[in-house]
Length: 452
Length: 84
Ligand SMILES: Cc1ncc(COP(=O)(O)O)c(C=O)c1O
Image (cartoon, rainbow over all chains, first blue to last red; front, top):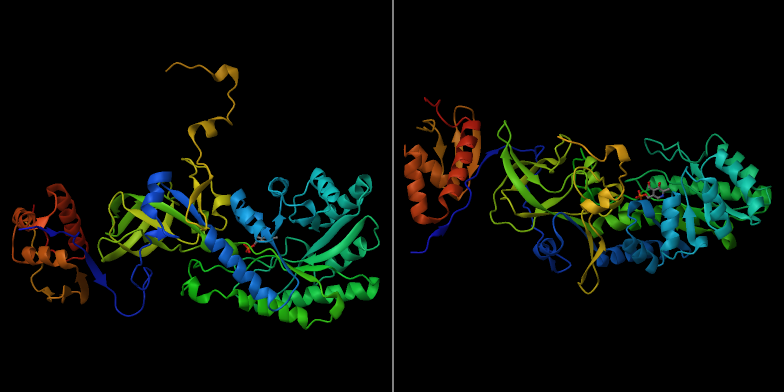
């Protein structure tokens, strides 16, 4: 007689009524394939853990966002926010789709140029632009978004030496009803600081004010905040026209659209609460269309959307290292994906699932990364199926900010692989090795030898 | 020898109720099989033998499963104080 398959015995306490901190106990759908490529094959071929990018999802998401805006307002231009994910292949997909580049440092600027983006299609944001950065940006006709008065004075001084008119915009911070109000970047709207910066730029013949920019925050779930921001920028544009007979060429609403990830402490999953691109587009374009800007001078709308365009396209795959019981009896699962690779686990309850389920039962589980660090928690409390050492897990929606903010800590950073539209896989970033890490160290001669 | 507390009721679907605390629990299929044998007073080695006869599982794997399962039963206070 053939023997029966034996599943791991499980007992779970039933809590009445409301979902507890381990969630609703909804059924868990494994992810065995990404764009028809088997998770198991990916891990076998490229090692574990592994970041995977779906090119199909990037292009689809981008087209959705663009169409939400274009159908309401024809003059729209996206600029890819490099800091959100500056793996070159990812940037190139966005550039192929028509996106310009938005950068916030000399490093990112050099990356965009090396990726082939023309200097005059780069938006240069941020509080840290060196004099050399500014000089290069002026030479290249880059759109310099001025953050503070010291930068404004730098440009005033540098532009005449370059012999070119600097193309500038100012970053403006304002009250849009969002808490906390971001007031550390740019010039304030309400207290007149922005207006006073404009009054310094306009008479200076070495600067041309092309645009007005704001970035009101990130993961903004209330589209109406964007209506407020748009109306305020439009009002400034009108005021500039009145005083200087000068028409602003563009208004840049920055980034900040929420992705479908669930914030820590949120009661409902992000996939239920995240506004759609249509919601944001409606808020922004109706504020523009209803503004007092003259019809023939309607500005181009720039958007620097980051996380909402790339989060869904990114996955990280990993492997179970061990099962453990905590002293209070809870199951803990140790996987090879740690907070070193998954920086966003500090703010998101990441959606993690097994690549396949051998057994339906779930248990209250804490999921830890592999680091020797107490903070290395991927999920503090989740209903999770019972897995064994060697089983594989998939974390969804990790495309934004992880492949830039990841830390080289305790171990090497993994490979990043892109699945193209035909289902072929390409390594788009190599993993670090002992050689890569050691090649940067320098040892003073007197420390070369020792005896133990 | 492990003894399950006396007045604990288990339904055929694996629903378990502890009248002492008012708490209820769910057992999966294999959880039910083991729990039933423990409640009947079977020893761990008896249970091991019967499972190995009928199921496709390695000895050491089952030991790990069983240890862990017993730990959970202890955790949930479903076992009589053990004398050593
Ligand atoms: C100036 C600027 N633009 C765009 C972004 C992208 O923001 P998000 O990822 O929230 O869309 C950021 C992010 O911090 C930013 O600082």
